[in-house]
Length: 219
Image (tube, rainbow, N blue to C red; front, side):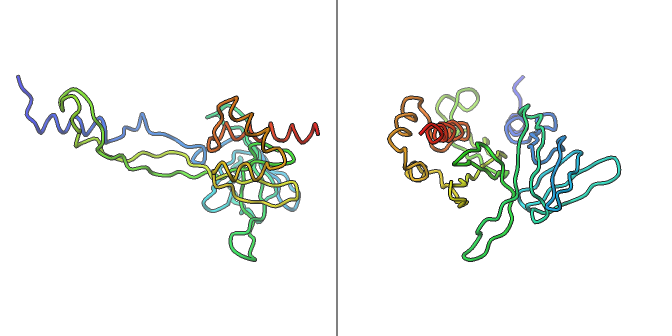
């Protein structure tokens, strides 16, 4: 028996466009994590923590209540992130968001040393276009007009805290990376080339920054 076209259309839409609850992705900022935070008053609070980069704020939940603290009231917080099975460390640092105006913002520490690599994350939505080509019902090499929808993913903005305590955004350009590490530019180029490291991937930036800090420590 041949299925009617509208049934086949509905089947493909359900598979490729409509997400199921079972496959719904949860991001670290949407979850509660065990940890503790330190306020500018130097008080330390323990409990389950949820962070919010959009509003530069942190919630902490214990047996009694849920409390919210802005970056202005925070020094530091630490969580254990079960999604990656490791501890993560965050600081509240003043950042110049416009000329002559600085405000406390949350930053995650990715690599600490003479040159410290920091990051801020956000959840972004990508539109899936209909440029999918494949075999099957639509034929080999034909465009599938129903492969459309959206996808959520984590995006990271990177920052460097320099040896002279300047906090500067890194715009993920190789020239910019070499500028921050200009006192060992040739060594960094060689290290990246030998290990096939990119200037715009999180795990690669961590390795490069650690290597640079090692060069400075051994000089």
